[in-house]
Image 1 (cartoon, one colour):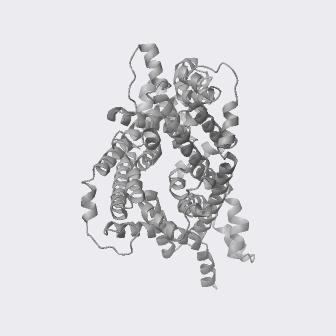
Image 2: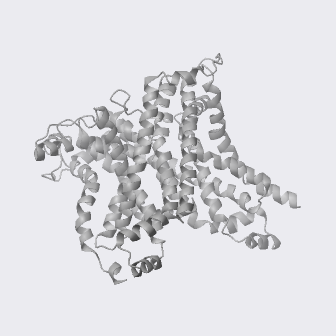
Amino acid sequence: MKLLRSFQYQVFLLPILFFYTVFTVYPLIKSFFFSLTNFNGYSKEYDFVGLTNYVKIFKDAAIVSGISYTLLFAISTTILTTLLAIALALVLDRNFYTKNIHRAIFFFPSIPSGLILAYVWGFILSPIGSGVLNTVLHDVFGAGPQPWLSEPMLAKLSTILVAVWAGAGWHAVLYLAFLQGISKDYYEAASIDGANRWQQIRSITLPMLAPAMTISVMLLLTGGLKVFEIPFALTKGGPGFETHTITQVIVLRGISEVQFGLASAMSIVFFLIVLALTYFQVSVMQRREEKML
Amino acid sequence: MTETNRKNWILDILMLPVGLITFFPFYLIIVNTLKTPAETAKSPMSLPTSLNFDNYVRVFKEVPLLQSFGNSLIITVISVLLMVLIGAMAAYPIVFNAGKTNRMIMAYLLAGFLIPFQTTLIPLFELMTQFHLVDKLYGLMFIYMGGSVFVFFLMMGYMKTIPKELPEAAVIDGCTIWGIFWRIIFPLLKPITVTAIIYQTMWVWNDFLAPMLFLNSSDNATLVLQVYKAKGEFAVDWPLFMTLTVIVLIPIFIFFILMQKQIVKGIVGGAVKG
């Protein structure tokens, strides 16, 4: 009787186990398998080539560029978004007349698809006549047009700043939720003890935000590593391979050029990067949380 | 404290320019939908000289918007409903029939968080091609089912707050395991179900990578994919492109306005439990 009940419970697991295994776990294992072969996606005949694909990765300029830009993007958007989101949350937590409309405005960019947002920014950053930013620079400062999307350094900067614009409001809302959970008693006690506003932020607010930071930073970092749409829509990965992302490289080498082996090796390296960085970040930040509380 | 209750108008003055800059891109696309390409090239930022809705008429003529809207709607609604159902069902035995096996299954499922979609892309592409699932709306839905692991995670956290006595009492009353889930547990999950639906709807509706790879024909394009395709076609006609963008943004903004309170609550709920 008990066994029958237990069996009935287990049936509820079948759908998720099926979909998750077939569409996530099995492909991951197969990626690993492909990465050791020279499979080109079509011919049934292929050989094991050992770690050749992994060696090739580091000789492929597009791939190396893809890895370094993706890391730069993930780390800098994480830092900038976090700083901005905390500052925004602190401001939006205070009482002022246009508080609600400002909350809505900052949250707005996190609603649409990144692809569409990036196209709109492409219009602003475009070097041609209608490029809004260059028009302003010319009319107000008399400065010549800047190649926002076609000069390597500027293109990297532009894609990162657009991503920060798109994500800061969302993360500010996350911090705001934690801010509102902090009891007013702490602040009252601190102001009786003569602590000024800045001292209160430093020794009450920021430590209490530590758990929110762990989550927010994890989301930003993993999201940043998986980035595709914003650089793809703004620069198509250019100039050259300067703003190529890992995802774009996998699509390019794997699906467009059907080099399944090479692209799979790239996928596995990507998986290891995500695993290592996430583990490192979460363990470091959780230790920090404990120290602060 | 009286200080926090008094409104701080200095903040209004300080935040005004920051808010304006943040909102500026939205202002820009809206005003340019009412202009001609020549007007836009001359003064992209100015307000339009006349209310000219030609671009809107043209976009509806040149892009199969209703069809794409229907595709996006079908894909989103069915994928999200299935994900929520599958995720909620999976949490049920993990929480109420706990044991060594189910702890292992839980760990197996949660490992899915660490597997980026991109890592599985090449084999998925092969799998989808092999089973003729490319360029099929239901094919894309299979791809999204991986998202049920996230729903499972949300549901599991919430389900733990339901007292164990509740299903036990129902068993004594002669209710089956199935009956308990559908009549007692699932209705109690409503708040977290709303959160899960919001998260997954925003993700599936806005996704670009999977539709780009797995939907080829124009008939099957989603709204986001239609914007991508139009970017090439309307290359020099920015006002027309902006008009398409504005139209495509309308459904998701309506969704936002309707769900505003729940969206913020969802972020909070997800964050606190995460």
